[in-house]
Image (cartoon, rainbow, N blue to C red; front, side):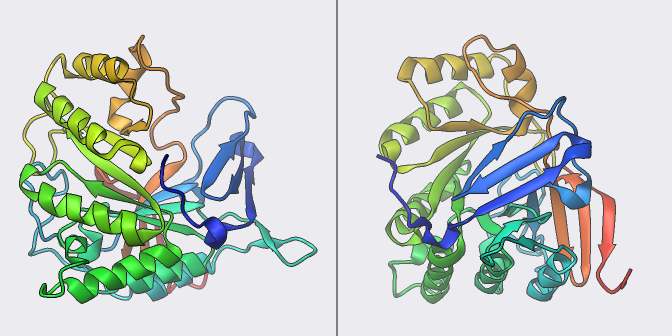
Amino acid sequence: MIKKINKDKWEGIKLRKLPMYNYSAVWNNLTTIRFDMGPTMELPPEFSEFYDVSLGTICNAGCDFCYMSASKKGQAYEDICNTWKKWMNKYHDIYDVEGNRCFTYKPLQIAIGSEGEPTCHNDLSEFLKTVYETNVVPNYTTNGIILASWNKPESVYYEKANKILDATSKYVGGVAVSYGNKSLRKYADDAIEGLLEKGNCHVMIHHIISDNKSVDEFIECWKKYGDKIRNHVLLPLMPSGRSKKGIDDGTFEYMENALNRYGVQNVAFGAHFIRSLETSKKINTWLYPAETYSKNVILTKDKVQITSSSFNLTPIKIIDLNDEN
């Protein structure tokens, strides 16, 4: 059985509705249900249901396949908590007769990561609390390097790792641990152990699918963790950033066969697999155009830059929080 989490922190129902975009959704306890109101339409960038959120470009790994080219020389954006609160204050929730918040135009969830490694930001724990207190579910992706020290008192990261895990337990819906860098898998495994032990959240694993061998390695990981993992998220290698190549020809078909052969159910697919999934006769998924309900956010001091995705950082809308209008 997938490890159950204490959902008391997510009690209550939230509604979102934009009828002019054929959109109506109900959220309850980390699950979103969308209703069929006609042809799927892209939501306006400032009213997306979900955002990838960048807190900076810094990363302590420097993976050679990083599509963002994040590095130790990157920066951590300043004043992220106040910037988030100012942004969310522009939205007005509606309450029912009992005083429960029930209707919102805010995002339902965010995934912190995008340009860099969230745990490198010294304000991550406070940011998780801040997002939670604005009635939005924070999630994040990590390479596991810092969290791996949760049970190693001799490590310089011990206190920081446990501070993040404590905030995760109180405020976070789910954490995805990156498994693509073979040299970091010991850290990833230790971080997963800490999250399962202390995180009180859904735990996912991100796999970079590049060739048939990477599929075999994913299957071995799936066997290792069984149903302790909420979802194994399969992401195709993309020629972007430091990565110069994409997924090998024939690897998607090899992956299809492996999923069917082993009966893998707890799996999800990255948006860049959509074209392959559309023509697949072996994998049944519910598909909608990429970026329909989600966007990417670069959260710098007093400014929210919304982009179509983390693969395209050209702003499609900029919200200046110093502008009272």
